[in-house]
Image (cartoon, rainbow, N blue to C red):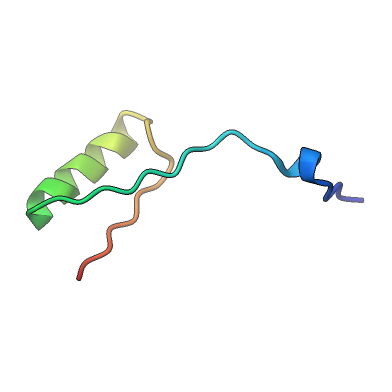
Length: 47
């Protein structure tokens, strides 16, 4: 049985949103975050 009470569902995570002026800079930053294990995954959203 899975415990779905609010206290059991709390986990340690951080959501960071940022903007970059150029796609190449965002790609490099995203790659560095994952390679350095500072992020488990990175999602880039393009306009």
